[in-house]
Image 1 (cartoon, helix red, strand yellow):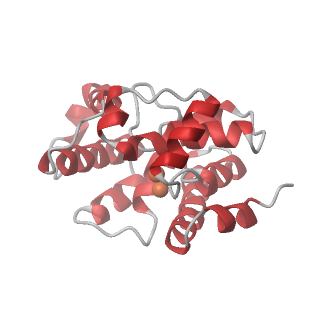
Image 2 (cartoon, rainbow, N blue to C red; image 1 turned 120 degrees about the horizontal axis):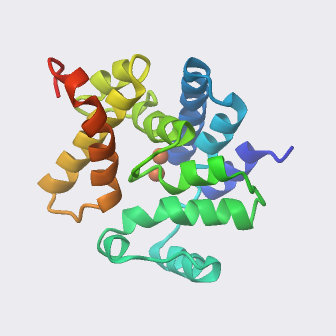
Length: 194
Ligand SMILES: [Fe+2]
Ligand SMILES: [Fe+2]
């Protein structure tokens, strides 16, 4: 089996490598909790930020090479490209063809409507891994092991709050992820800090 740990040591800086290893471990735990494939979750967690430490020029060149569209949202917020580009790198360079893993990497920053269990797990593991510290993270951490969808909503609120306060562009997939779950879950969330 390919040593993905060695690979991320080559391609990521120290901080991002530690974050990726922690995300992998958290994803494995969440997968166990919710009956998802633990090994796939670990792999997706380890590789989810593989495109995060590229320069903007490198990212643009690789996006062109692999046919990753840089939409108007990503043009206005370069942070958004590393999910889709990471999936393309994993597919083309590591020859990982598993769509569950690829989609989990592709949508880990924005979420989207109709997220799979694996996508939700990677999205949340990325947010709640132990080195990630921000106001409200403890609520999301706790919720993640009690109510996966509730935790996605809390996290989407946090992301939208962050984006709005900084006058950044909102990716519609994040709004979709929020609405998709909120329409079903709203009643259950009344009485929480939401
Ligand atoms: Fe990321
Ligand atoms: Fe990450």
